[in-house]
Structures are given as structure tokens and as C-alpha cells.
Length: 115
Length: 111
Image (cartoon, rainbow over the protein chains, first blue to last red):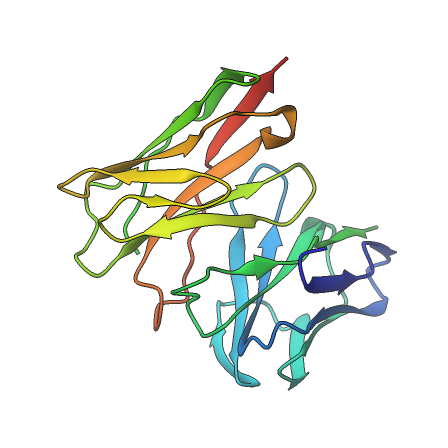
């Protein structure tokens, strides 16, 4: 357990479904991130939150909608996804944005399959 | 963030030191070298980082050349659990949250 908890670990959803991924950290970190890792591709940064404010949206389609209600929780709301959105979705946190001193702490990820 | 170059794969015998190289010839003066690893189907794990001095922690040592154009991550006594993909990343840290992961080096520790 890294201190960043992601649920669910696995998710299978249809293209018309709506689901949410949850990330929780109690490390006292101020920044949280969503990454996507597709098969045999490098990690791609999706969203960045600092002190609950979104500071980066890396050209992510609107079918992905992040929410950060407080500094400990981060959600990724999913709707009308495509099969190519199947991937490992990783949440990370850092003390401050950029993780200069201690790096990023990643969760174990949610393995998403869109059918 | 500057780009890095790593060999795609390496093997290491169990119990021996694993030396993972990384080239970052375009690194800027304010950019750190970070190392992460990702064990299969898990999230990446932070290992170590440094600016220009060599660094050591309980997991590994980081050797950075004097010109800062390359570095080596050393796992002193590799175990089977060290089998993972190792990523070398350069970033200025604070204010630069684009932690760009490349393809990394797949380290296989052989019994």
C-alpha cells in the first residue's frame, strides 16, 4: 500500500455506461494527478490538480471528467467511452505540484476495459 | 522537460549489482534527474532523484556525471522483486508537473 488508494482495481463497462474512478490519499499532499497507461505506451498525463484547483487538462476528451472535492480525493467520471479508452488509469499525488523534493506517489491503478 | 535515452532491456543476475544507464544530454541547469520503476500491473514507484551530486537511499544509488549529461542508477544487490521497468526522467520539479515517462528499461533479474 503506497498511501494512494484507487478503487475499483478492475472495471468493465459498456460504451453507454457512466462510471467513476476514485482516488484517495491521506499523505497530506497538495497536488493530485490522473495518468493513463495504454498497452505498450508510455504514461500519459491527463489532469493535474493543485489545492483542489485544476491546473492542467492535457487535451483530454470531454468523455473524461475529473473532480477534486477536497485535497484528499480525486475522481474521474467516465461516460460514453470508446474501446480504445481501455487502459490502466493511475492516480498520483505529490507534496507540492511537480513533486520536486519527494517525487510522486502513485496508486496501483484501475484496469478499465470498455466493451 | 528534456528527453532521456535508456536501453530497452537489461538482464542482471540475482545478488549482483544492476547498473541502469540514462543519457540526458540536453538537461537544463535547474532540472533534476528522477528515477521511478513500475512492477508489472502496478503504479510507478519513486526511487531516487538528484541534481548534480551523487545520491544514495535505502533503495538505490544515483551517480550523475560531472557534465550532468548522463546518470546511472545502481541497485547494489538485485533481487527477483527488482524485476520491473525503470524510468529515468528529467524535470525541474516545482512548477513543472509534466513528469514525462518514456519507454524505460525493462530490467530482468535472473535467478
